[in-house]
Amino acid sequence: MTYQEAEAYLNRLGLFGIKLGLEQVRELFDRLGAPDRHLRFLHIAGSNGKGSTAALLDAALRKAGYKVGFYSSPHLVSIRERFRINGRAIAEARFAALLTEVTAAAEAMHAAGRRPTYFEITTALAAEYFAAEKVDFVIWETGMGGRFDATNIVDPQCSVITGISLEHTEYLGNTIAAIAREKAGIIKPGRPVFYSMMQPEAETVIRQTAAACHSPAVRVPPPYYNLSDAVFDRESFCQTFTAGPYRLRLGLAGNIQQRNAVLAVTVLEYLADEFGFDLNPALTGFAAARWPGRIQRLAPGLLVDGAHNPEGAQILAATLRQFYPNESFTFIFGNFADKDTAAVLQQLYPLAAQFIFVPIHADRPCRSPQWLGELADRYGRIPWTTAADLNEATALPAAGKRVIAGSLYLAGEALTRFCPPEDIFDL
Image (cartoon, rainbow, N blue to C red; front, top):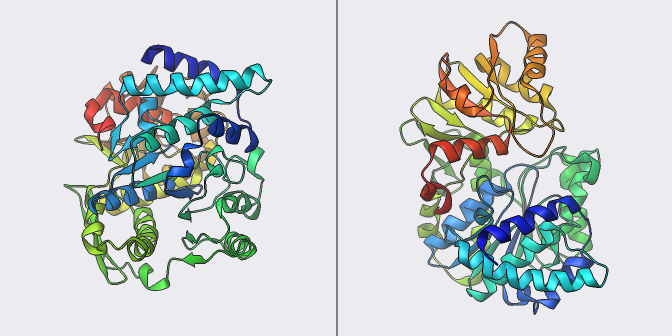
């Protein structure tokens, strides 16, 4: 199987959609020799912040001298991004070879009447890759939810839960408590769970689930949230602040990253005690952490962020205010049809000097640029125009700095156009 054939095979599997449950993925792993049994996982779930928290943990553990696997989703440019060791995405040839092994097991299951999904197959491939490379730790990010997510067949060293918000309500439930219950499904008997400050109803669910599993539940201690001395560096797009006894420098922008960092610190304190590494040098790795497509500078006066839901847009708006107080922006915006577009635009509208609305060229329904413009008119008289695609939009005159937002898919398009490949494949 060539790399192109491997991509085509997985793309065809997209037709089979989402299957919630663990029996099928457990069978797939077992047919491959149960690679998860040989790995040490840090399992991470959350509505927002899980990718950034994972990136910070990855950077710190690498700084401590460990070999670290990192499985994440979705990808922005290439599926290879989902499978990293020490920041480097899997090579095309290795990906194709491993997928050949995994598909042999998947096709045997298909012959017996069971069809593994895209995500189940990529999850198995990740475990195969990390086991073969004998990594020390695996940063193991859930796809959607947690309880029935394909990643949830592992027995982790610990579980980590970031923020909880309303998302994927058709699958996870339409209340914060219901969604927290799905995320809390990654808690395993006797294994600690670490979590950030969150809504009381979400925290109640997490603590009840942990108690039922006889698992320690560790919330980030309040002293770490005294973050009033943050310094934001416009030139490097970094920030420095005090969290508990530590002075931290982050290569990630925004207050939300402070929250993610203090959660990562709490997890790393536990790991340093368990495995005997020096925590302070490890924390200097935070400065090198990168997470593409999340409040990222692409060029002078051009930023990109994958904010596609109200909470993400709120975080983007707050970060822009921090780094560029009293400035307004031209938002190049596209959004899929299943998102709460009105609430996203409401967060961005106070900072907008202009909107340029674009379609998203993908296999999912998106909002048309004209529809987006008519929606924007409900909130005031901010000028807007439309463009056929991102190339045309970035060539139009702009009022102030330009910010590409509204979709991780759109962020991926922007990275493809403006970033060299090594910025995406080698973190």
